[in-house]
Length: 362
Image (cartoon, rainbow, N blue to C red; front, top):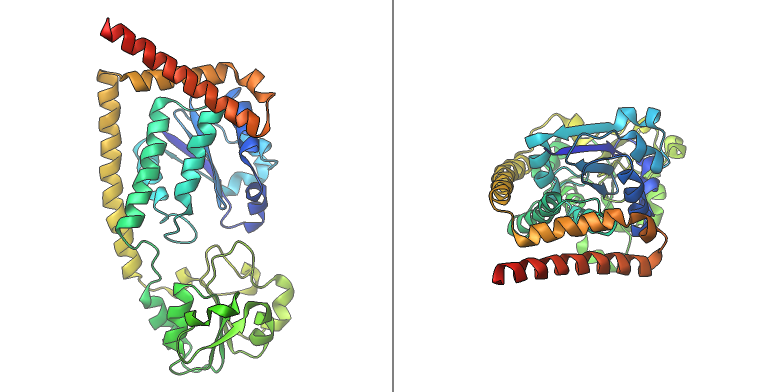
């Protein structure tokens, strides 16, 4: 059985701060303390927009939330959970970036790899869970290298051209693919300004669009009729304190995560009420590939049950050794502690493999 239980920070960006500066030592410490509560193998997946436990049995999120200095009562509206096949297929889809606030981003691959690394250091994994995380990471890499996942649907640009037909100056905050597509579509009939964080990269700006420094966005917003944010940063481009500055202007927030505070009334992609065929095609393709990958993992599980391999047995014993030594190992911190944990894990695993090979040869 597989379960995924977590907290989504997408609708409450202020929670990002709990994970932004969390290093490996902190996550190992949290994992070791959770072992005293959770009685089955698990992994901790921490990203900029979620904190999740992937486990082989159902777990309560409350101990995890307390270790993250979060109030369990306050976190209830932000919790989610998946189980069995739904959790399995979701992990593969998650690894491709299509479930991230920034659709199609690829940093989730390294974050899944980090969950695997932390699980090995703390001894919370099983061979089955280790295999699953490895497969998810490899699947995400294959998908990202084999297709264009991060798409900004041209239907959004078409819709905005229609909505802003009577506007004057337009400020676009951002310089990524989506921002460039909108700027190119709108500059045909409007004066369009596009922000750049690095003014040496004016080659990113479409012909007919004026590049302006990101730091001067408020000055240009004040003289524009419409402001469109298409960024991918974790911090708000505008704040609640900009309410008077933005009053009476058309506001659109197509950023991931949300860039303009919801209280300012910006229109989001989902508010446009349009179909996104290019994005949906990516989602459909990845859904089919995820089903196939989940089937491959289940087949691997069946093969392992029928005839466990030496490597899987060795890995299982190595995880058990790390768990049993978690107390003494916790007293060794920093890089020395991580290196020692890795040394113990590898030494035990290699010793078991050597022992089993000797038996087979004799």
